[in-house]
Length: 174
View 1 (cartoon, rainbow, N blue to C red):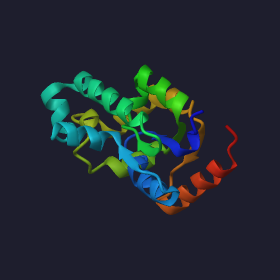
View 2: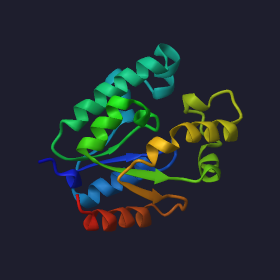
View 3: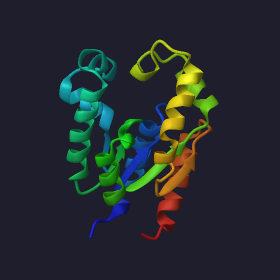
View 4: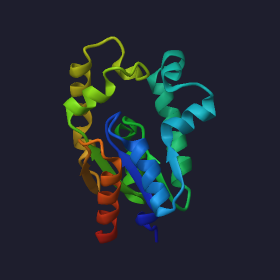
C-alpha cells in the first residue's frame, strides 16, 4: 500500500510558490525535497531557459518525464513539479495514483507581480506577460484543479501556507 502522506507533489503555475513552500513543507515533515526543474538542470548542467533554446520544449518535456518517474520510485518525498509537468498525461497519471497532489492556486495578478521582472522563464519570452500568464493558466487550470488539495497562495506568507497544508494533510482520509 502506497502511503500518499509521505509522497507529496505540489503543482501550479510558475511563481505559485511550489519550490519555496515545498522546501519548508519537506523540512517540517522530515521528508526529502525535490524540484523537478532543478533536477533536470543538474542532470543536463544547463538552466531551463538554455535547455528550451538549445533543445526545445518537447525535448525538455521528455527529460521532465524521466526525472519525475525516477523521483516517484522513491519511498517518500515532497516534489515541486514544473508548472507544465501536469500537462503530460503519463506524469499526471503517476502523480495522481502515487502521491498526494496539492495545487497552489495563485491569482493571475499576483503571478504577474511575481513574474514581471523574471527573465528566466522560456514560456514567457517575447510576449505580453499578462496575456501569456492568462493563456497558460487557462490551458492548465482544469488539470491543476483535479488535485487532492487546493490551497490559495495569494499572500506572501509562506509559513502560513505550509501550516495550512500540514493541517489539511493531518485531517485527510485516503
